[in-house]
Image (tube, rainbow over the protein chains, first blue to last red):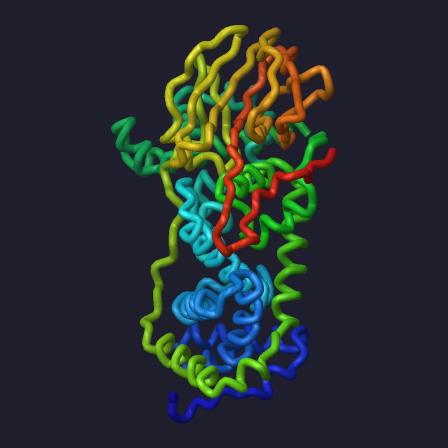
Length: 203
Length: 232
């Protein structure tokens, strides 16, 4: 039993929508100061809900409790990845539980596909703005501006192609072309500026 | 305009993590290309999150069991002993975003890019048809990239299993419908068709033949979702 941190049963009576702000605050304080009291509040609110959800999904108490434990462990260990601007605490925690459920089912069913939940829903992945994260809109734009792209100087074109189409990092491009990283960066910048101007003229 | 979408029911099962890996991949890749379905999937996620939050379950019954409270206490304590994990998973970097055929480059939707390294060489088949096998790790599922050049096609065929196709580029028609980039096409043993491509730039497809698996174990929800749900 955890001394001094009672589970607060009263939390379960709070209406869901009213406590999103409160729960966000607790997650932030876990992220910033590893506050155990805040986590205990998150736990006492969400653990029973997760258990109920998991029981319905997995139909088995042991698996359900495993799902609760894995989900809440992620909340405790990766609270810094929560972003209140992107969604409510319940949505975040639901998506973590969903990912764990997906991976548990995959294992239980012995599915051989080389696919895990992070490939489908990068809930606990750091969102980097690398080339692989470009949205389809951006890709379509890339296709549409193909002719503008052709108008770029050869050296800039090579860099843009390697980074935005082949998905290489700037360092990889520098190594391949045997040029300094700074040159790759300036060529990228110049090319993007040029494309921007061309796009504006096009509009 | 994308005309062929997975059924909302399927999207709902997808966002709950209840579809098989390969079916999930097909839906995720379609959502990469289809703003409409991406939006529906997002809304479905919110709906299920809300349901999850508002259902505290039969806690009183759980608590009648004296050991249950203790289980939660023990769980909380063991979690609090875990260290913070600052290593965020990073999505694989440096992965190529495109495949090449005869000097032409095709950008793949984000979800399919992880399979680019496990895509085999292109083989030229009959009728301006090219095929590259994609190793998704499961031998009982045939996954392929198919390219049909202008005027090319696939001889009339029916389907033994269930075939799901995502049109990645260009258009094709099969005597029943015309399909275009982003379309999610479902075919089962009732369907006989003759795909032909008339578009000047050809068309690129990602197709999986999923032999329905017969599950006998207890996790009953893990059913083959492609039983009848497909709509236009």
